[in-house]
View (spheres, rainbow, N blue to C red):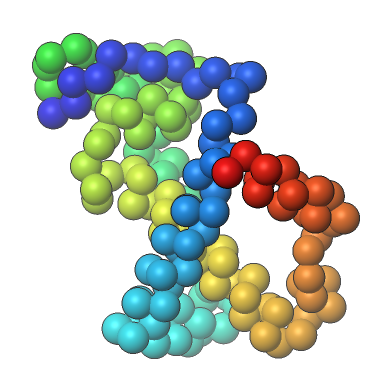
Length: 149
């Protein structure tokens, strides 16, 4: 049961920058731990299999967005069919409504980690387009992230 009132993201806030390094470190830790259990099963069927793995995770997230989260203070959280698409696709509201560890956050984390695996494998294969940072803005972004910590 979630007892949080409905919160809205502040479009002007950059506080999320102070959490990015922790998110990345948690991802790396989870991927290293998963490697000991699952090995290279994620890439066993090649690039097509890796893409389908991403597609399945995205499908799960999209399916969860099929219902509008209804956040009721001091009540059970429910999901209503239909509703305004703006509400239905508000992933931050879904995260607030579904605070279970195996909820929508689990699918978000899995998708992000699979993307890391794919890019890391592409770098290991020395695919030229994946050899390093995508743009020179990465360096300036990295500096601003460290400045917020």
